Amino acid sequence: MKLIPVILSGGSGTRLWPVSRALYPKQLLALLGNESLLQQTVLRAKTVAPDSPQIMICNHEHRFQVAEQIRTSGLDDTHIILEPIGRNTAPAIAIAAMQALKIADDPILLVMPSDHLINNIDAFKQAVQTGLPLAAKDALVTFGVKPDKPASSYGYIHAVNEGISVVDQFTEKPSEAVAKEYIRSGNYYWNSGMFLFRAQSYLAALEKHAPEILSACQEAYSNIRQEFEFLRLPEKEFASCPGNSIDYAVMEHTNNAMVVPMDAGWSDLGSWRSLWETGDKDEQSNVVSGDVLLQDSNGCYVRSEFGLIGLLGVKDHIVIGTADAVLVAHKDRAEDIKALVDELKASGRQEVNLHRRVFRPWGSYETLDEASRFKVKRITVKPGASLSLQKHRHRAEHWIVVKGTARVTCGEKQYIIGENESTYIPLGAQHRLENPGAFDLELIEVQSGSYLGEDDIVRLQDNYGR
Image 1 (tube, rainbow, N blue to C red):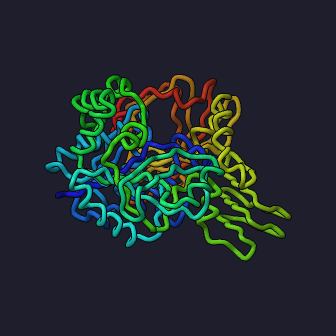
Image 2 (image 1 turned 60 degrees about the vertical axis):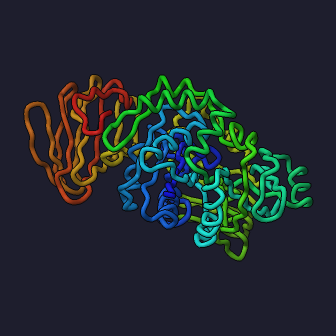
Image 3 (image 1 turned 180 degrees about the vertical axis):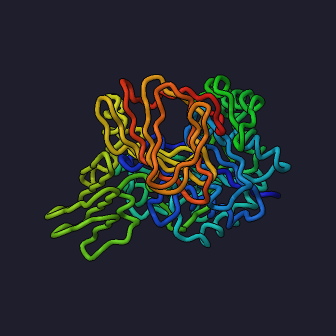
């Protein structure tokens, strides 16, 4: 029976703000090592099912970043399904199951979040192998992590017996006092959010316990369409689907749930505190990343992504610095960062959605300076890539190449400019920027005009279907 990994990549990771943001979330970040959490997940899945394609469910806003990270990981056999709107894990897995049934005859699905840490790959593979015979016999298998502390930020699984067991009950994020009681009583595990089951078994359970979700997903999947390398779900049909997690919709109601214990160095990396817990600590129990100077400080997690951060006489704090935001919080308040993000969102702050550096399918741009009538950007275009053929109603642009070679279309003219050369794009002129070279093109763009918003783009032709 074929095993197909299903990777869920719809989250926004708000508790890891200001590094994780809505349009460049936690799973796309290299928080541990050189690879992003998503890349670590797809490569981990490949070790378990080396000959199988993978199915990735992601937010349509992240599609180009996800595709690029999968491409650079060398996994060209990934089916990327785009959600037009988030509906939680139960619908996402249903859509993946329907896609999997087109790949193989009732395969077993290994469902994994894209943003978790697993340190012991061999133990993870062994847990999957242990669960496969159970899933083949119609069980809905989940993987339980033995708790080493009474964490109130995790869901819990109560097993009937020790070891491989039928599940008695799921509990979502109990209080710390209740979590302590769970640990004392035994046979409780953290819910890892990973599952193993046959595609048909899951769809049958969904039909029994949440038929409205199954019906809406069937309607949406029947209208799925190919868009470049993506499979895009229709917005109207998918938006009508009730949002619910697999735990609430299925696992808490089924009689077929079984838990396989897993001791693989797992963490959901759900907060900055968890990054501190899993990180390499110095002699004062600090975990640091980037340009950081500490004196007489201990128990801190400090991350600098822009400039120097200095700490003096600080204890048990989280300090995060990016190009446009700084977070300072006590470690005990790490779970409350989501409330801070909600307040920023309510006030319309762009720091919730975007970094100063914004990624596009052709490369990236970074805003260096701006005022009422000008904006300065650094633009990077990947080899062979091009921006859309476009025009602006309210701004003109000056381009200065600092690295590489640019092919410029401006009106009826097309020409090449190299390093230390510049060109001018008048207001209203049709134009396009391309990189015909083998290396990144970098240029400085100076915009001037009455309105400099990103929505002042009239696309006339685009290679990426935007």
